[in-house]
Length: 140
Image (cartoon, rainbow, N blue to C red; front, side, top):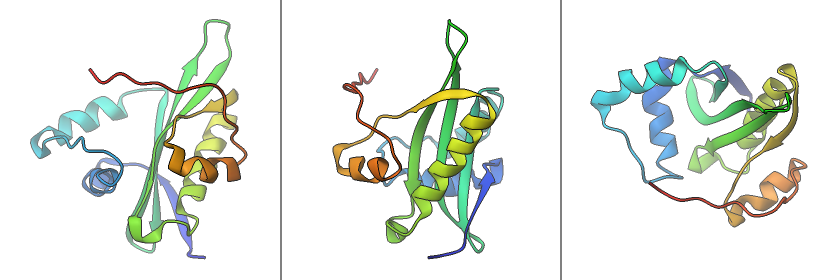
């Protein structure tokens, strides 16, 4: 297994992260909007992003939104887990999810939730996530 290091995402990672995300999403922001997007993203107090590196190469990204529920509990919503296509099944995604799990525990979340494609369901089940109902979306 490769030596995977996890860090908090920073503005300087943005271009590499956006390129990685192209492997799981068609949406690509315009380059001229990156500074505005970073400013808005990084100003959110309950959103945390992490990047995975092998050596000096950025090879993965993931984020978590900590939602404070009306009854006072906290739920971590995991989003955008992505690893470099050439390094899938090599522990990058697992390291990212474990780092996000640690963030959730540090912020007293009582559960983590995520939505995923059926094709990656076994990956998340291997990390002890369980199916729980149906995930739906509406693009607007």
